[in-house]
Image (tube, rainbow, N blue to C red; front, side, top):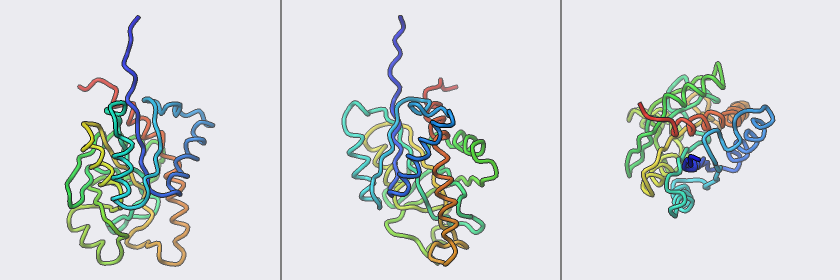
Length: 223
């Protein structure tokens, strides 16, 4: 009888209650449709709400990854973000090639596969790839242009801290996928942008199967 090692778990980290709610309701919806979410196709997974901001994200992820039992856990940061480039719209997807903040840069794993799975799941939705930068506050107005000039395509407050904490606690695969809820021509502070928030919520609720396929791909032999 052959004994294969148990698959490493997947930790999906988000910051806000509304993001956590979208992911959990998406999980139940996928189960009803018969999608491969029992264990997440690649093994056990959990969805963790870290709280808002980089410090809260770092504390939460470090705590969840403490101990040898989770040494190989893959980590994926998700939730909403602000798009930086003109022409981005609420409901667009951002797959990070790397996350960055003043403390460092973390390269992401499996970006191409995530893009492929998201395009398959959500035909017609635009998927952007590039650097995802971190901030300790909500970015507005001219600050977008300054961040865009660094090469970043989107910004949020938790992804960079989440992935930095993840790789500091061990050698593990990490990724970040965000849904644009706020963009240069579609700032949420404007009247009439609630529709954009609803669109982003619906997209976030639909993307768990792509995360599970990414997780499953980590178990495949490398060529």
